[in-house]
Length: 501
Image (tube, rainbow, N blue to C red):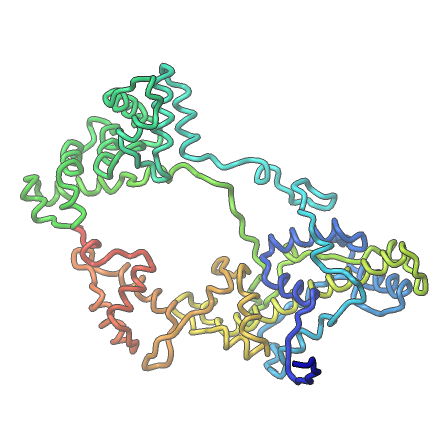
């Protein structure tokens, strides 16, 4: 076949490196954004952090940069003005393309962002980093294993017993239970030591006397029994509680109190005391030891009430303020094509685009957060029971953006409200039909939680009964849906919630 030329027409979406970077900045959390800004500052000499007290840096930087390059452009980030819901503009004529048009389609540089931003943020503080936390960046959280090993080092153990103790500690999980069998521990030790099972059992008993109380148990019964053994001898109903956790723990777990009283020959008042004593114990003793590094949540949006209005604003502490370095920008010459001038001009263009991306991110985040607050005023004023159904499409339609953009904005972004700090995704939920309209699944969960809290502990509400009570309020919810919501709230079934009191 002879080669021929064929002309075809079609549409193709091309994402420039600049647009890709803008989308990536949009979905970053506040902590990740700070690291991204730090990397940009290290890679681009045209960028610098703005001083907190410098309120007029935007105008001065813009004037200097304009004189150097001849193009009027944004050269410093600035937070958008707070939004008061009473004065909110409900015009929804903005299209998705307007947000994209804020970013230039292409920069006149022959580079990719991957070629520039490859450095990683330093763990050392910068000159302007007043909030640098030495402890959180240099220390590691204490684990259960390190806590036990520290105590073992204080015990007068032989070298062989010490190796056995280390092997046992390695087999203890985060809850404090020994997952490995004694035979497995024996097989993991050096055969030349000639360790017998009874010697491993003896060392295990030594470990079971360490803190936290109950650690090293092989099952729940042993864990509770270890904790009871370390209580004072004059503790009321102590021996009866030991007998229950040792021989009748299954009956206690199934709430078969009648059978339990027959087996133990305890009266109802005595059994109540035994149960209260057992409930005071910790079934997961390993959880008392904190593990891992501390994690902090920095809210991106702050919502506060001013008389009858709700004010939505970005958190100034979480939004970095970056500007063009006026000194370097003044060195750019318009007609000079030297290597040094080209280097400065390219980085100046990159800096302007990066700053514009940050401003676009701030404006989009504020716009989406404002719409969320407007939809969920009932939650802010009355709590979860007043949460309204909300999906991504509702906010996307309100702000004139695509659902994928709303998904990026609401991921790993947090809102500080008078009721607490919530991820933006928390305010989105499915709906259930009711007589008075659609009801949010979050509101239904809150109603279930309220009904269970007010129930008679001797006769807890079943899932069918809860469904009937909700139906009386005009909310049609299937029993299996009630069970699903109840399990998501970590609420036990009615049989497991039954109590003597």
